[in-house]
Length: 449
Image 1 (cartoon, rainbow, N blue to C red):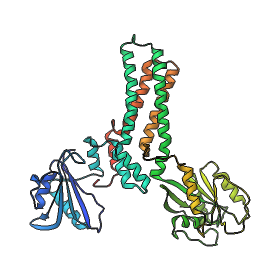
Image 2 (image 1 turned 90 degrees about the vertical axis):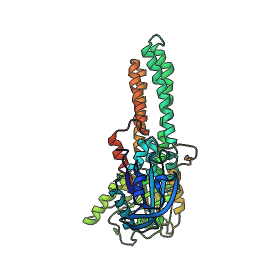
Image 3 (image 1 turned 180 degrees about the vertical axis):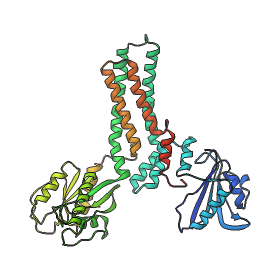
Image 4 (image 1 turned 45 degrees about the horizontal axis):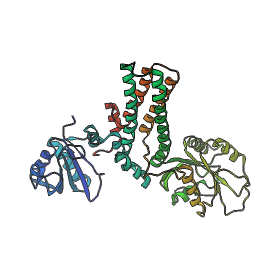
């Protein structure tokens, strides 16, 4: 039930200065008052902090600060209690166990945020933005998440829905009062240009969402090349640590090695692969097969060539294998005598071992994927895969409505497609959310959030 009282530890367990145990629900204040020696919390004002002790069977468990938040001006819109206790696994769990014995129940993952949504405190995009803030790995991804939490995505979707609703209303009037407008005139002169305008706006949002997804999730980036061209040295140079073993022996890297870096707000999820060549070594062949799988899944290929050697047949095979992928050709070992004469689009010369050219590589990656077009202060970007998928479905429904208009189908057929698009946009903000969707979404949150 949404009115019962839930409790959970909201901070990561472990040794720390402070842990927070949180409760939300109708009996939160009464339950806390049963175990608190200090001010009578039932008489405390909202948004106040009180010093005292948590007591179990007349024994002091911990010295605490309790914050009282009274409905409706709280995160969940219910009464909330937050107990700031000393850090450490035992004491926090002991306090939580005590609260559960007094009538609270253990919260499910994300249940505090789910209650905030169900009680109208936030919409679904804001709930998802909370998780994005927790998982943010760069300043840009944090800025993006905060814009979602501020309601920018919600307002964007509401504006699109309002425009659709206006069109649907015109059609309803025509259906109820057919003499009011000629059907062909209504479709071609009123509805068609407005649908086209909406479709253009959605396409623009989806284009920008590619940047948002990159900022939020980063890029799956594969470092590939034949053996001994400097792939592991490049990985170490980018990570600024000796993560991969570097030797002159070919085939040293036999499995994928992973790490991530932040390049100007773009997270690169790096995978150093085994050198790809024809090999009879069973272990090396397994590594090569893994490398080919990584190439297939990668969103960016860092293809390393050795400029001190002429291009080989293995190099040519890899160039062919990756020609349809977004890639940067990295001409490594620039400190050695140059034998490589070919030129490539999106290439940069480096010496991974001497850390030369790494900055130029990072700048090229930024240019390729953000192109200077990202302005988080002025634009609203979708970055959530669920939201983007729903917007694409809405776009498809609007395209269907344009086809219906073109074929001069009955006006109520056009209306069906417009209503479908309107409903799909509602799914983004949680206007039509099912229980199964909510359970799946909030289960990804941490306990106590």
